[in-house]
Length: 232
Image (cartoon, rainbow, N blue to C red; front, side):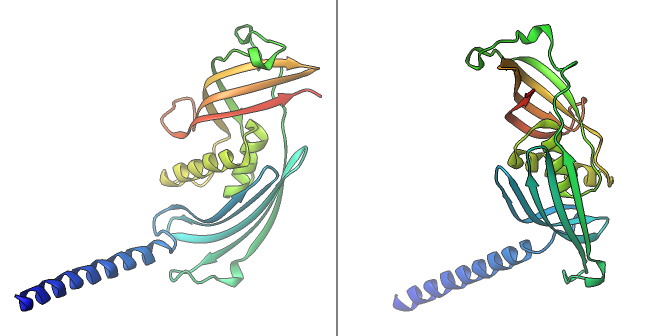
């Protein structure tokens, strides 16, 4: 009986060890850059005024490592980007290193088109009523990188860095998955908005989804809420 018990224990231990080794090998393979096209985030940190991202981007089998820093200032977003290609063994190729600097001015809402009669403009934010609303936001993007796309979204929509990062990453993945290498010049919102006015300032509050375009076939972010201000 003891012999049978020992054999059973040995079998169980062997199975556990096999599973453990299998799990370790899967985990080890997951920390490398993806062989498929798209983005793999290594590290990303965002605050109210700063952005940091380190990631791999793979397009057509060619992988590049990006390290980017950004600062959200009063009237602009500044981004410094360092990129360097890696070989098939994920070893960097020093001769391919590039450093770039970008600045994006923060744009105010278009006051001529952004308020309609249905908004029921109020002077009290607490009584602001959300109404169905759709809007296309223009994007000006000078480089196909995560932080640059994020900066363009922050300056155009008024999103915080965290939400902008989610949208930017989704946009890049969609573009790359369709074989593209540039970001569209606009982004589409469908949801609700309320508008209030206080001491010469107009406040816009949004709740809804963000799509690649008005066809709404590619959802980039769901149930996003944010606000932006126009005026001085």
